Image (cartoon, rainbow, N blue to C red):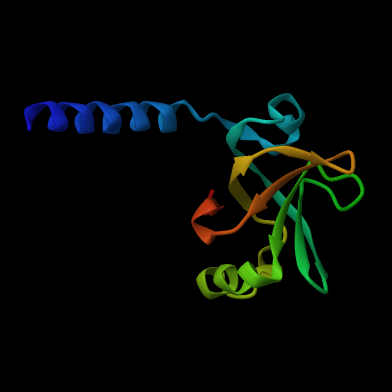
Length: 122
């Protein structure tokens, strides 16, 4: 029994260390973290709503954004339930957490849960 407790405790300790190691970066530095799990922070420059997805572009409008957060339609309502109409937040700083990927030569984080986006009050 104590062995199971020790394994559980060491697993929890390891997961907290891994979580603490995730860097918080400026979205303008996203290109240096492709394939990495990060918290990327920047100014929400625009939101583009397409029929089945929503693009949240950081720092500049498309096609000059430093990073895009993609939210699919099936998940978007959860974000609006938490924040209200997200379009009202253009110009505010946000942090998004996830793995930075390159999609069609653009840097992107796919968001499926509003717990991975945070409005920053400065």
